[in-house]
Image 1: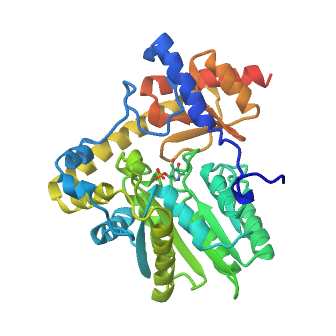
Image 2: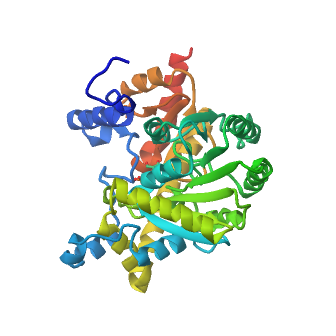
Image 3: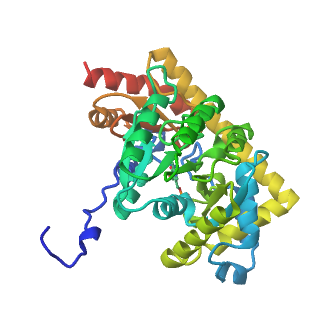
Length: 413
Ligand code: PLP
């Protein structure tokens, strides 16, 4: 590598964000043709039927009434005490696993993923992840010099591909002693897929079997969309992570972005679950060090919001009602999309909740390009197309599958 002012490890090309790019094109089309004509399925946030970002009243009314000095002040480096307790009960609901549990505040779920990749792996160790994934995982692996290995997410019957997972885990552990297994479930981005409870038993059995002496396996549960994945019972799987062997650590990346419509407040937590207190404490200490070294402390007001809403019965009820209202709205949009897909024979991956539905196909870039002619803006990735039901009205969700099917048939004829 030719020398220049940048250190070798920090030389990256301009990170081309294809989602923002196609989102920008959709915006332009809306300005030219009007909102009604355009289907913008690119945005990864809850959008109302009139095209406006949904920001929960229960959250932002609480914010408006906060003391300005509290908003202006710093939070604690590890996160405020009430927040750290609140986030654990909020995340697990009625299904708190047993064992020693600690949490640490992070800049969104992103910060939690960052800390796990940093603290539980060394350079050259593997992160293993299904091949339908949130691209930031790979960017973080590049940044910290971790290896990123993907495996086929679903088998031919659209079940979690346990065999592929097993092979990837064996590969990583054959080469190295540490591995992080990422599971973005329930309500995976980009597919809406959720790993069911019986499959979790199989996954955990395999992990236990592979956790031989001298090997360290970290499970990372990225639950960014969990509040939009069911009525609360979707959290039952958390109980399965009780008292796993000492060399298996469970971590949870919790995000306030979607659950509180607080994307820009940049708040979340990494929750640490271990059989042994000393292990949970040592991981916490490592991550607290990382907090100080990277962002010092997170947005104070976001932590206060979560605690104020949790501890005030009335606020907590309005928040729950609002969340439920939008969860149902999202479900209706997804139902409309899935029903229409069935009618026209468009194959989608199974959807169980969350913001997105995915359509597996070849030639996704050309198809996405073709769809622009029909005023649909959609995200193309390596495996197919990602349709954001979070951002498209029910009516438009109903008409989209036919247009997508036509474009696929046209490109792949
Ligand atoms: N995990 C997944 C799968 C996501 O899609 C996102 C955001 O889009 C995140 C984590 C992190 O979000 P944030 O850092 O805003 O909490």
